[in-house]
Image (cartoon, rainbow, N blue to C red; front, side, top):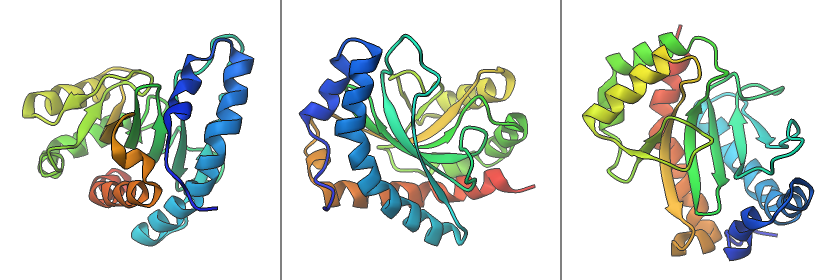
Length: 205
């Protein structure tokens, strides 16, 4: 079955009370869609990067009490995991879908990656105006790609132990694009293509 897009029920999943009930809804409503789009996105990224990439679908296995506020798929160059590696994500909160190149706090060598990005800020500044950044993957908030926000976000990523840096696009749950499966997938691939130079830079050395 081809991907039919994201729909209101997917976003309503995150209004369900209780860990067990919400996890069941994630598994029944959203993860099947991740299993549809994940292999396609992974194959496209493998072709772009000329190396094998691996799909990971968030299990939220560490949770014992609080239900997740979002869920995602991740694509990384490591078969066993993604959190300690630069990776690509597609996921959703109750309010929006996100498409990220993600560097989260568990990543080693954060300082050197941040320095590389600081030295090559033109690669970030040259991204389309629709792109945004995040400094915390657990929060909905995003920041515009302005000189001062890029600088402060990279400084925080470098200097703060829990600092994170995510770049990409977000789409409001009411955006018509989300209900058009093929169009959304095209936008996701185009987004990742534009982030590949930063991904490759972060792997150097």
